[in-house]
Length: 457
Image: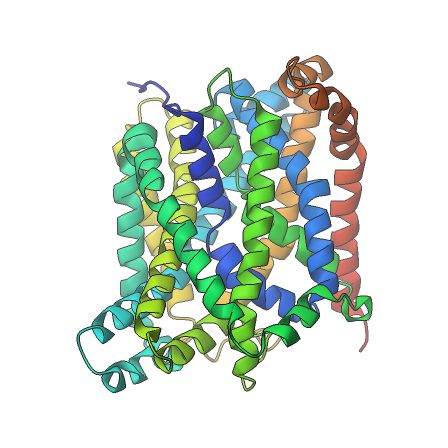
């Protein structure tokens, strides 16, 4: 028998989970090295513009799609296909769920790295730092594929236990406890990072744009990362929207989540880059940048063990928040599609599928280390394929389904609040982005990236 659909007890609960899902490892682990790959300040400027001009409108559209249908992305896109007569739109929702579960599989491996460093800093509190310094070496961890698989499995198990409790009992309560601590830890770490002598050089790199350093792929890298950190294109925000209360104003929620997410992205780079500039032997374009430079640095300064423990507790909470959002997408779609499926069973089955898919990325740096494409490992290529290629395509597909299946009157009713005058003035701009600017920019980004693949050096 189908269970009654959950809902957010409070507006605060929705914001906590939406921001928590958006502000996971994407901001603290991925964004710094993507900025390094794309030349610093010019890319940050491009990213910030794309987040507000494209990311926020698409986020609002996905929330509105979920709230209007009261269903997750597969059923919601099916309904849009039936209303518009374009039945092929149902494949958009299925592709979104596929992307979510595959991203969760390799995301769990990175989360396992965080668990490893967290436990090593915890051990450092009770033993000599010299005894654990070798164990905080990322190369040692990455050469042990079975340890990575075990850590990823532990992370998936924790995520399943939280999600299986449901929206009200599990997600909202968990995020409500962890997010305030997350903010406090990030604030402490940023202040510590700003005390480093490399800070002035970092600020010049990050906030003095040099547009000559942008590449053919930079626009799509910015879009892909915007969608990744805002959870657009995964179906996550469609699911969260389906849990929203009738009185919640979607545009307000969407813009607030986007602004917070963008601020945290900026905080992440000013927190990580001063340390990275100190360790000049580590390339700023290394996907393992944060894990390479921070543990060694923190173990070498007074009080560094406590700072390190605080940082990795903070980072793991962020990773767990995002994993909860990804798993919730799979579970809610399963329950919506099969009414007889119990939520608990769907959660355990989804977790098992994610665990099975985790095997390949977990062993990519050990057993499968010789399998490289374009000089990159399996996990790096998987990240690039999903975030820089598939995610923009799925986001575009959901946008098309929204445009074709939701009438203009429904869009206006969902966007305009009679008590908020600014919503009247913003509505035509939002519609322009949905119908013209958004699709054009996404397609342009993909085309430029294709040109970049074939362009000669």
